[in-house]
Length: 452
Image 1 (cartoon, rainbow, N blue to C red):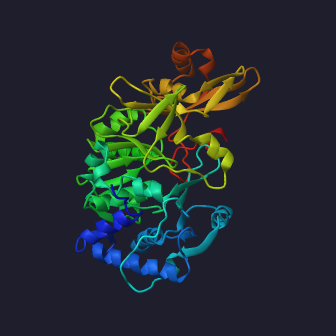
Image 2 (image 1 turned 30 degrees about the vertical axis):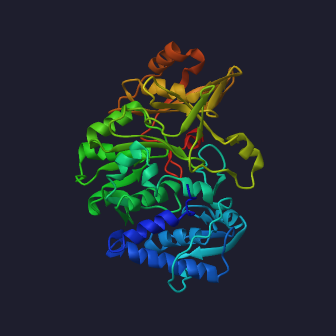
Image 3 (image 1 turned 90 degrees about the horizontal axis):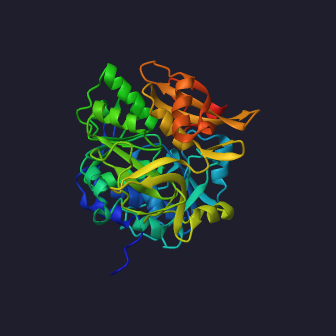
């Protein structure tokens, strides 16, 4: 079997086949596949004229627009190592990224362009194609280094490699909203899937009411964002009649939240589970049991309760971080540091983070199972557990809960519930009601802010 041409050849082939079809929409501007392919070629030649070639580092400080999307593809066409700088970072963080052996920095107002010509893809399989930074929700962000071989093997632009859940999702991506940052792994890969499925990428400059305003059929949403949307639809519903796929990403959904969203929004929820290190691991379709993340199409092993996975498009290491790389990238497997199990029907359940713990009387207890038990209380919509210092036990459990209908559960009720299921050491010593969890710039709930 002949080797596949390196990424982004499969995407460029999709654009070539979509010569006269709208593939990108931003306000009143509509771009066809042929026009986007021409733009990619011009930018690629402009980058080459600046001396950028295979293995060179390029940093992209760009917004969400057609030229930014074309620049990402062009930088990969020349075989560069691409570092996307997402908005919202501090100046020291930006300076850190620009110090990662970067040869060229590209901004929206200074995109190099040359003459259009036939595109060729120069990525070498062993070279790093991109550095994607983790969200930092469990520590300092790390740069996941993904090779051209890995990006070429990934599923998004290869329909023959689509798992069943992705095949169903692809059929719903007629108009996919992009916002925030195209350097986001999730945003970019579903944009690539949209093109391959024959859909249109639609820029949402203001994502708040973008589904209605842009007649969108699909968008990515975080768990806190989903909770807000469900609450809004219950009390003052907007017209979401075009919506066919909500791609829930970033953190697990509780069974209760999953059921409620399906009830209020209809069969549109696709609950994805993946990591920056791995790409997609598994995805629940609207027909799958609430509280699960579907049946993994990837290789999954559960070792002492912790998930180890192999995916076609996984990263190889953390850039310039051999110690953490050795802990996470193990003999071709990625140690997710997530806890979970497969049920008798093969559905994957996530139960917490391996390093998210509370240590009571020198005994370690994972907070994930504690949160799951508290969330089963009839007055609790969401539960977040943190460890707090305690003079008697070293650490103790503090529970933050989002109540249902303003019914705040009593501390004694939660203590009894947790003690019966998990033992007295896991029972909360304090409970605090919150309207919603604080979120990090990634959109994920940030429990470190609760601790503070």
